[in-house]
Each structure stands twice: as C-alpha cells, then as structure tokens.
Image (tube, rainbow, N blue to C red; front, top):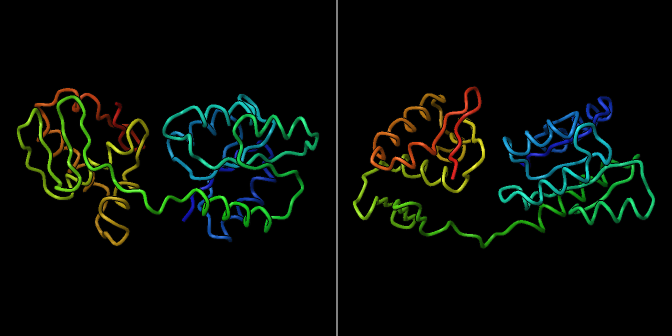
Length: 229
C-alpha cells in the first residue's frame, strides 16, 4: 500500500481527499501546515506527498526544496496542488523539484492515475540490498548475515540481524515499532510491539563494545527508534 501525505490548510479539501484516496487504496496522512508536513515526512516517510502551493509556516515550494535536499527523502514523489495557473507559478514548482502539478479543482480519478503512473515509473525492481555495510569498525554482511566488530564476529539471531540491517538502511529517521514488525517480522506476525523492544535491548547488549552504535541508537518516546549516523 502506498503511503501518501496531503499537506493543505483547507480542512474540507483534506477531508474529502482523505476519503477519496483511502477508497482508492492509499494509506493517507494529513498535515495542515508546512511545519507539521515536514515532521510527518521525516517520521512517516510517505512515498507520495501532495503539497498545497500556499501553506502556513513553510509554503509548498520551500517544503518541496527541503524534501529534495534531504538524503532520505530526496526520491519522494511530490505533486503540487494549487488554484494558481500562471505559467511562472507552474515553472517555479517544477524548478523546486515537483514531479507534477494539478490545478484545483481537478478530478480525483485523474490524480489517482497520475500518482500510480509516477509510482510505477520510480519503482526500481532490480535494486538489491547493500551487500556489506561498514561503519566505525562495525561490518554488516547481508549475504552471509554476519556481523563483525573490528574483525571479531558477533553472533546474532536471524531477527536480530535483520533488525540491525533495517535500522542501518533506514538510518536518521524515526522507525515505528509497527514498521519494524511489518518489515522485519512480516505482516503475518501475531506478536506485539514488545518483541521489538526485546530485540533492540538484545542488540544493545551484544553490540555493547561498539560505543558509537549504542549512542547512535536512540529511543524516541511514543514513536519508535532512530539510528543517528
């Protein structure tokens, strides 16, 4: 399911779009101003962002630039939504990094079709996990599911390894316990989020000799975890 953020200060518009896009199979998030939208982008990592041209705190074009400039969000699909139709307004949005531009009012079906087309275009089916991650003496070998610290093997259980690998490949953003359960344990997992906490604790214990890792792995109260690299 594609996670999508609607950033618009028009509450009625957001509510209508939320219903329509949810019925079309999207997981919808909303934000009423640019500041909140930026936090949602960093924490929830939506694949698609719909940005109103004019928003409080941070306008659509500036937020588009911020998303493009940040490493972990630079490939987010961004569509500008606005009542402005002047050529220079359209040009300025594309110059800021937008993938497309819709003038209000528009037909929801047209937007859905465009989102699906952009998502299929940006999918990278041949992408493969990074075979080896090296960070401050810590080596993570995906193919062998092996971890060493300064050349010394560290024995991890399979889920501990996959959790560690996921944290490194999603570094510098908050990952929720539910996200970790879905991506490390799988959607069919019938346990609860305490399983994540237990495995995080195990990782901290087993990698206690790597002080950089222990300091980098932070708990974000009420949200999940973040590995700051």
